[in-house]
Length: 464
Image (tube, rainbow, N blue to C red):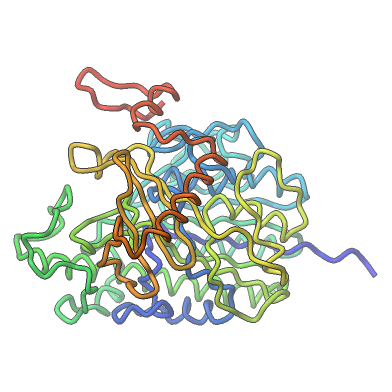
């Protein structure tokens, strides 16, 4: 009998898809039948979080297994150095084919620049653009061809078609494929395919209880130019309709990918992951986009389907972005590099105890849509299977019991009856900060330490 084949990896992730915006998660509006079916067959991590809920930092942690202050990508549009083995390097060394399709956002040399092989973190098959959210006129570079190409139509559909082609051609040998979609990240209005926009009528959508009824409470986004002048609650419904349309379009892509894996005859030998880099506030608490510690921003979907281990189960234990690399390496019997800071969950997936009791979440330097002049601030927190605890530079800030208060409407910070719990969570947070070498300093201190520039107007220039 020959050596058992190592499992393939199909790692599919969206940009800005919050954990609650799925049918299986209880959203009353969104239609995601294919992902709901996937959840029933998967390890469903209901407390998965983004270690730093914004694009580049989360993506860098996926690739390196490190926290942002270790790999240095704690803001968008900076270059991720290739100093240590990436997840692609690990799988290359084990004889895997490695591929990446879609949005990258880790190069830092311009959002439309061609990324040469030495800056691809070891991925060998490459159909990528650094960053775009122009979903219907979307460009990319195809492997080593220096001429830029265009995805046909809605980019996620064409990217999925290319991913299916990769699966069909690679199926006879172990492979790891990352498929990175730009949606449902904004712009939200009229950017999803027409048939999916038709699925949602803004006036029929049910708003979350934590979306303020008093429009005066809203902190407006930086840009409202996607929509005509209207009441802000109506705007929220318009935004949600566009967001959900993208979610349903991507759901159809998941269905096609699942069918492709089955058709290739490799379903039992394939680990299929569906997740996101971070969430989107979408008006909850009167807030928008990401970088916030609330669940809408920090909590992400994480489904791991591996028929060899389970036919589907709910997992309460938190899992964090840096945990994904070591977990996948361990599941494929690939050595985890010494520099990795994340915690492997592979032993638990095989039936052992779940590791750790808290996941570290952080915002190291507020920037862009949430820079300091717009109310942004540095914070650190922990997310357990039940609670969220966060402090900023001034001290304890948020404490939520997510079981009794799932919409995080009742901040229990410094309330006497929660003093013992707050002290325990503070100890957990401090231990996490010690483990990651985080002195919790002002964001500009990290900007200076990593050598990112500041222009004459005092604006930080991240691109290198």
